[in-house]
Amino acid sequence: MEKCKLCLIRDMAEKADIYEYVKKTRAMLPEGERASDELYEERLGVCMACDSLLSGTCRKCGCYVEIRAASKASGCPVGRW
Ligand code: SF4
Image (cartoon, rainbow, N blue to C red; front, side):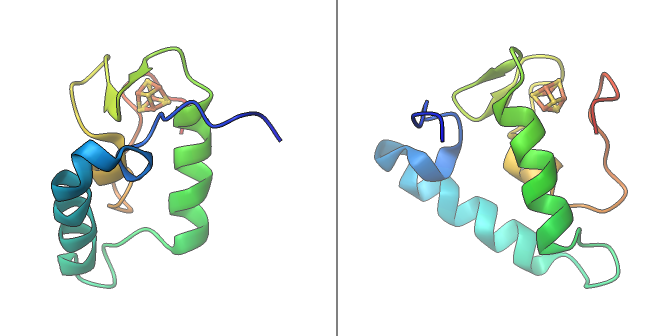
């Protein structure tokens, strides 16, 4: 497995408050609107391999990817997921 690049908020201790916000936001989505755990992790895996990811943020849209990926209806701004 590749070494962690600290791509996601959850990997950055100094952003712990933001990660709590991410988790709360995801949990608040109605179940029918929330991406499944499997889909969520699949999306984040694509983001982690993407050149546009910087410190948990997508440089194409400005979103925190862990929030963007949480909604079933969301999509990558350039169609990668
Ligand atoms: S949302 Fe799309 S463009 Fe943005 S970081 Fe993820 S894969 Fe890359």
